[in-house]
Image (tube, rainbow, N blue to C red; front, top):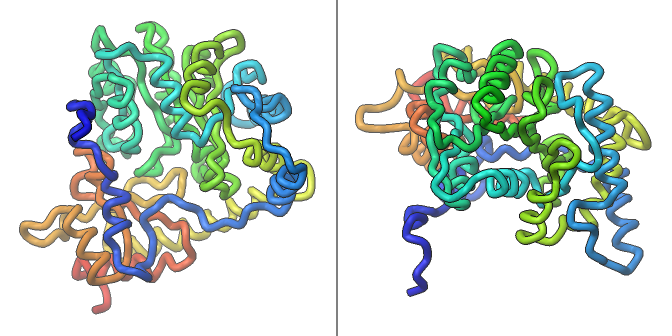
Length: 392
């Protein structure tokens, strides 16, 4: 037997994947956060043109200059109307293999082994998994249903310890869809700056906001790292194209960590990403395509909320992203938890939803439903049947 790290002995597929992989063929997928949008034509054409050159060189470790410049320009343009980082510069952008690699690079660059990283509970499970991979201790800060699953400065300050090295924030959040109140976020950011603790802000859902524009900690401070990508906004999940952004002059260490992990992001993906960023900035052939995507998902959100409320179920405030985090605690069978419920829903009702426990103890008794396909009413109806609600 190969002597792998004992501290990772309990590692395995996340509950998100475990439930998905165990579902029968043909089950309605409302589990994975994978938008069903078509990759814009200009993005496909740019990747095709790169392929047709007949060459596949490495790019610079931090990514091609044209792409990094466009990413920085996008943030600078957005900062006029939205609360994103105003200090964006091409020098501080590092192009990565998806946003998850960006998270890995960020935490590996910040944390010494044995130091503590604070992650939200409930929160995207990769936060804690990556922290453990880099040798950090993981501590959670509570997101409470009575506060709309939104982090507060009080909860974060209560969780801080002398060895806290970084705090992970996400807004809009996975799994809840909650967005941090801008005033509270300013308090959080100022408190972390006072404590000398950097933040890592996961902004992968930045184009899916329903209760107002995105507000990033980067609006209030440059003492942190912004993480984002194109998987959700351009539908290129499998192309694995993301980035992290730090203030100018501070990219040396994360670039070196990124180089040690993968050298550089795919140049095919980078070529397509230039066109995608142009479209997101309302330029070129597919200018404004994101407006249509947002309209589609806003309408699906409305339909999903109507269906859930029609069953008498309640959910977290769906401020952003494309998830409903549904409270099923009052309707669980005796002896059944959210994990068992989701397995039964997949096998008996043919619908895949994700147990709240996949996102931490704070999600126990809840399920995450992704409205990333058009059959939202059918998916909610199957959830209702599994809970003994609605038409049988």
